[in-house]
Length: 256
Ligand SMILES: Nc1ncnc2c1ncn2[C@@H]1O[C@H](COP(=O)(O)OP(=O)(O)OP(=O)(O)O)[C@@H](O)[C@H]1O
Image (cartoon, rainbow, N blue to C red):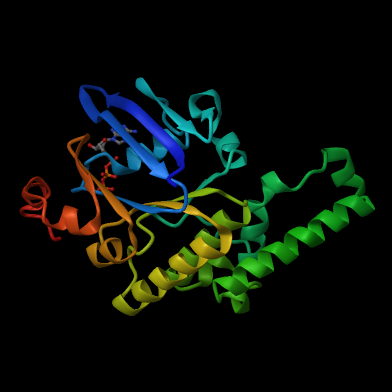
């Protein structure tokens, strides 16, 4: 049975005179991989920024597992169970891979500042658990050998996986990925697709994915939503979307 995990109802936002997202509604079902596609400037990343509250809605609502997300600040969204990666990798480049994942667990570690200063036994135990959890995620992503490497020194494809790992260690229910395969070659993209499917099952995740690589979108998404000029123009299975005339028209002149 379908269970709605996120529901966006008539959401809109404008920048100056430009309606970047225009009365868009959609639902994401628990356990699915939903693709969000559309030509450049269609409003995809803006939708991510609205979900994560980097931008505030002009109109409409976004409800995640019964929570009205507009009541929360961006740093609280991760505590509610929504984690994201960014279009351009945003890691702490002068920190190690492991340290980057420990930052990702910030919301999971429960101690106050005074305990932190005197480093009680409880603090040390919680830190140890956090390290073990981070190492487990690195192992699952098959990048544990890089744990003590500086993130900024790693190949781009590996950095993308580290960013995914950082999102995973926060224990999300919904993970939103902004162009995860950008900059990857064909082989890396295929490997990445396998990993996405694997971690989805392993962690019981739901995924919302922006991606320009159509072979990746078509191979891993259960459903796809298409935006053009801020409006939703189509939604359906990969087969339905690839034969939808309005979608083909929107992409004319663009590489599909
Ligand atoms: N903070 C902002 N201020 C002004 N305009 C913005 C802002 N954020 C987004 N926009 C505009 O909103 C529109 C949608 O942008 P958005 O980044 O969501 O598109 P996109 O579909 O993610 O595109 P791409 O595939 O190129 O990343 C664009 O015209 C963009 O310039």
